[in-house]
Amino acid sequence: MNNKVSINYQKMKNESFLVQEIYDAYREFRNPEGIQLAELFLKKNKTNQLVWKILGELCKRANDIPRAILAYRRAIYLNPRDAIAHINLGILLKSKNQKIDAEKNYRRALILDPTSTLAMNNLANLLRQSGRVEEAEKLCRDALKINPKYDMALVNLAIILDYKDDLSERISILNNLVKSENKVIYLQAMTNLAIITYLRYQFDESRDLLARSKEIQNLNNSVLNNEKNYHIYLSKILHDENFNNKAFVHKTIKKLFVIGDSHSLSSHALNINVWGETFHCEAFLIKGCKQWDLAKDGSNQFKNKLYSVFKRIPNKSDVLLSIGEIDCRLDSGIIKFRKKYPGKSIDDIIENTINRYFKYISELNKNFYHNLIFQTVPCPILETNSVSKDDNKLLNYVIKSFNNYLKLKTKELQYKYLDLHTLTDRGDGFSNNMHHIDAHHLSRQAMTQAWATNFVNKV
Image 1 (cartoon, helix red, strand yellow):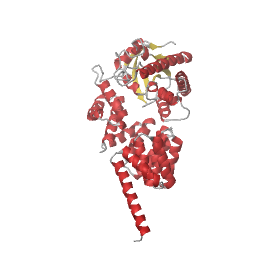
Image 2: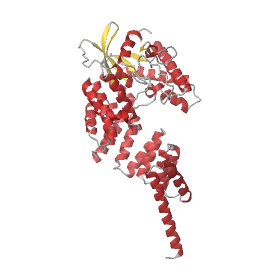
Image 3: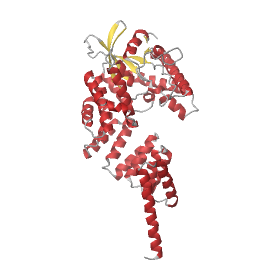
Image 4: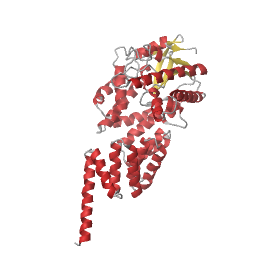
């Protein structure tokens, strides 16, 4: 072996060793060390596509998404035909709400690998959130033709069917998913089935499903946060000693349809007295729905579901819209938008959101003539352990201002409202701690009391 060949061989051997070190750091979750090793390596070896990909994943774990995106863009520059790199870049772009570029990368991945079920499922998820549910559904079904046991595609299809208001097939899919060996998917499926059975008045079955999946309440897994919150909330509703397990609806009793986010569940199966009559409340859940989502231009999954529900119930129905509380949380909606654009007035953001929301609802209702009632947002619980004084003050102000403007808007448009804010106010805009069942939701007794004392019929 001549000297030049020997030097090249030793260089390749050293590079191979360093790449293995970087990969081992990634595999063993030694993220800071892995990032440092990868960056030192790439200073001298800028064309190593694998290390750029590993660096992208390490930065993603460190929640440094901009650096992760740059790393994956470099990896794709070095190998434009790497379908997995396009998928991973798409995931990163979507996390930064760069949906157009994310979609381009998913579609490019499918051109490079038409059988990539991962690309199909990720693209379907993005399209669902953008309201393109028909195309999203087709992609999920195409992925399942290739791999009928692909649990993530089944999960995604079940979500799509929920927003399409297609219950029967969704139940079938969830019943299959409870057999999954993946604990996260099993617990997600069990919790969603518990919600469905609750809304179908199968209360004992819902309790049983919650009991069999109670492990979820003790797990610290961010993927399960949403289902965990629903599990705790629904368990409290169903184990309340005053819960009527045999809710009976006489055919002569009128229905009040409660449509909206998780707050709608507290009203389900209640009988309330209003307008001198008894109404039976029937809830339709639109998971995670905000006024913000309905105020946006274009279609999305929340608009699709609301339209489906408006269409399903009889024309001229009495409807309580339970939408708005998620808009007012510290980590979403109005406050999150203000933090992103600090130069904007928070009052302008509130008014613009509510104006556009009412405009959308009023236009939608022209085809159905429903008698609409708008539910206000309850007072926030004063949390001093995990929330700063400034954040508590901001939350209080946003919820108070949001409700005040919502009430003004109902008066302007001659609608009615159910005032949960006044019911729960201790006098300074914070909760009196008499009506909450958890950090956000009210008890069923609170909802009954609200109808008796805080329903505003004439505005």
